[in-house]
Length: 259
Image (cartoon, rainbow, N blue to C red):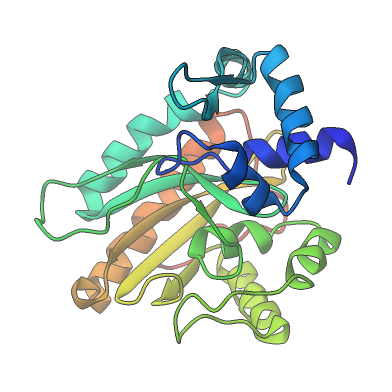
């Protein structure tokens, strides 16, 4: 791993429930030696990617991250465009909706919306990171990813988040083939027990899957009628979001597939 990759890896340890991280924790999480972490964080601090508090000296993300995020949003405004889609999809299905982006080793939630229809709902955080193999969003992205990337993901140790998580690469490949037949993925209890999730891929201008749009609901509410409603709504919303960000689905993406 090169110096730049190591520095970027350190930034990946910041999360909604870990907005400040000390040097010792970064050393433990990264597995690097303390001197290397200290040097890399110093360089990131000089460039404005991190900063330190005056009292405990813990690191937090710096203003340069916001600058890059603003540039990304200006060039590919998926965040601002997705908010209306999420709201409408949540209102239509009565469930939690979220949009995620695929990264090299994980899937990250970009934004989400709750429906006021139910007091009991699936909760989540923006910027939450999840695994590819155990989530409907991750499977929706993998189904339309380059074969080399799929094999890269499946060659890594696959964590069993619950007793229902698929961890056998061959089982996951079979699941991906089924997703390609319909253009829609679903998981039941795979990442969190009692959560049933459906997702469709979101495509960029190069017709590659850059993320996924998903609906997550308590399994107890997922009747056949509700599943049909969610699948139909997701297909429409996914196509709308792909179109609004200037993307297009690949030629082999299923069209007009019954819910």
